[in-house]
Length: 118
Image (cartoon, rainbow, N blue to C red; front, side, top):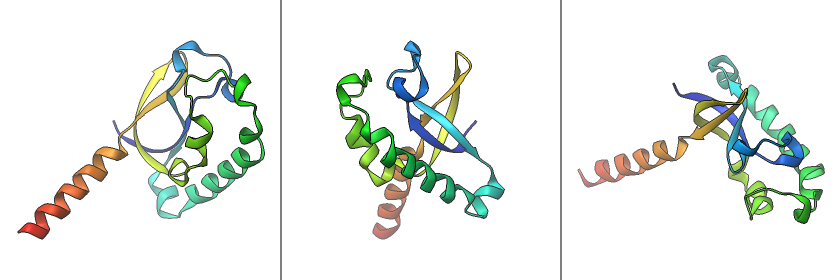
C-alpha cells in the first residue's frame, strides 16, 4: 500500500545503531489526506530543514559511520525536504520505506511526451 510521507535517510548518530537500516530511508511522518490538503506537511518540512541546518550538518563526517558517503550533499539538496510517495516496510519495529515518487515522475514525463506527439 502506498502512502504520502516525509522521509529521512537513516543516520546512526541521529537514529541510533541499527545494522539493518544502513542506507535505507525512514518513514518519519505519514501524511494524511487532510494534512496534505491543508498543507500541514509544509510546516513539518520547514522544521525538519531547520533541524538539519542547525544540528545534522555540524556532525563530523568522520564520525558519521553512515554507509552513504555523500550524506551531507544529499541533505543539502532541496528535493530531500519534500513529500514522497512511499511503500512502508517494517524492520525491527522501525518503519523504513521504498520511495516510489520517481516512478510517478517517469510516468508523467512519458505521458507528456506521448500527448505532445499525438
